[in-house]
Image (cartoon, rainbow, N blue to C red; front, side, top):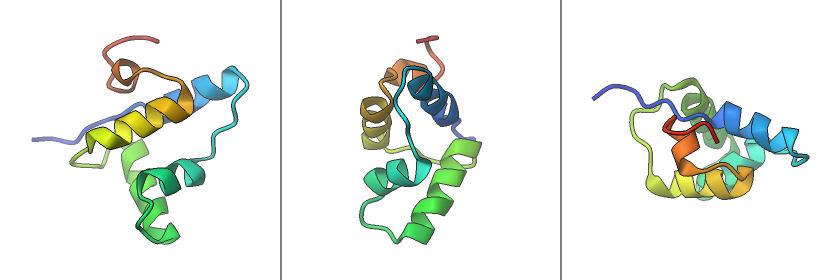
Length: 80
């Protein structure tokens, strides 16, 4: 199975266009709460760049709730 591209950057941009400032480091801290900040940063970079080989469904829920974007949007299934 190949890499999975989640539209994290686009979701953050959409949230910001609606007046909600999202910081990747804060999002990473919620997704990987048990990891060190350095590991969180690497994981977020990998997730945003499409290098991540697996995506936990819980991550999608967290990103969706924080950004206000649907999971379908994050997966590229819908435009909103």
